Structures are given as C-alpha cells and as structure tokens.
View 1 (cartoon, rainbow over the protein chains, first blue to last red):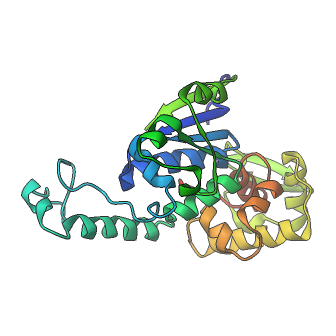
View 2: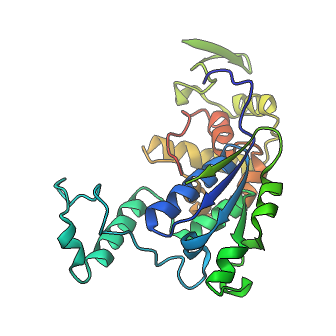
Length: 166
Length: 103
C-alpha cells in the first residue's frame, strides 16, 4: 500500500434507496470501514429506510424493470417485458440473496449486527421517517436515533472525514 | 522479497509485512509480531489465530461473518482483541496472507 498522508478516518454513508444492491452497497462500505479501524456512520433516508425497518429489512427486493444491466443466467440481457411476469422480481431477488450468501455476505439484519459490533452507528432521517409515518419502535433496535440533516452533518465532521452517497 | 527477524528466526514477508510462507510461523514469532502491533496475546488470541490459520490452510475465505460463527468469540470481542483493523491485524499475527474478502 502506498504511503498516505491524509488517511480517511471517518465515513458517513447515506443510503437513500431500498433495493438489495443499494442497501448492500452502503452496508459493505460501512462494514469495510469499521474493519479498517475507521469510525463509520450509516444514515438511512427515503426508501433506504427499508433497510432498518424491522419487519422488512430481510425482505428487500431488487428491481427488474428499468434496469438495463440486469442479465439472465448465462449472460444474455434480460428484456424489460420479462420483468412484468408475476414472481419475476421475487425470483431474481432470491437468486441475488443466494449468490451473496455463497460469498458469506450476511442478510441485512445480521450485517447490521456485525457493523454495530464493530463500532459502527446507524441513524434514520427524520424527514423521511415523518413522511413514511415511521416511529423509532418500527426500526431496528440498532438505530441510535432519528435525526435531522443538520444533526447528520454535525456528526459527520472531523479530521479525515468523508461523506459518501451510495 | 523482504525479510524480517522474529524470535531469532528470519521470515519471508511481503512489503506489508505479511508472511509469504505460513509454515514459518511459531507461537513465539506470533508473540513478537503482536508486540509490534500493540496486542498482548492471551489463550483466546491463540485460539483465534489457530482458527484463522486452519481456515486459510483449507483455502477458505476469511470473513467477519465467519469469525462470528467460529464459536470462539463474538465479533464485538474480536474487535476488542485486535483493535484497529481486526482482520488485517489478526492475519498478520497469524502468519498468513492478508485477507482478500470485502466482507
């Protein structure tokens, strides 16, 4: 590794979308940060809140419509019209989860537990929680608080800190 | 290739200080690397190092989830045992290559 005079010491990651891949992008970045010994905050807003809603966090789906990168097994591009077949989204989502499990990527709730055990913190966005009529008790017990954007910026500051929007 | 001397033995290491030949490792060597990393080794540490070495020898990916399921310690304790970058530090002390997994 090259010498780095300005190492990243703290990351604050914003997760604003609720598909499997969006949520995992945030979780992998966050967990990777605590594993490197950095301080890490995860801030869930809008549909990203799905990842911390107790009843739904392990039931996330991936979108099959409007995703031009979606491939069928074998590598052929998945035609958009296939996505409208009932059950297609559930099938693709379950395949994604199975493949991730093979790589020892845990389900969302377990991933969050590992992240918190490593010293990471979770926050939910107040505006989005209000909009979706969510209370603290609807959210995972690992969510420290429901905070405003101003409070988010306050806790995101400090030397060597970065804000990442996934 | 770089070399380092631990407990009077010359070890082949890469430029980050990871062993290139895990068979050169001994417990005495581990204790010296640990000192360099600021870690005081207990029996639990050695149990974990043994686990990591066995997994690596079996060609399995080392992941934080795997540690949690190892039955030796939970992840929270693992972070406390090897403060800073736990998986990087523990594999260095265990005399095995740096893990390549992202989880």
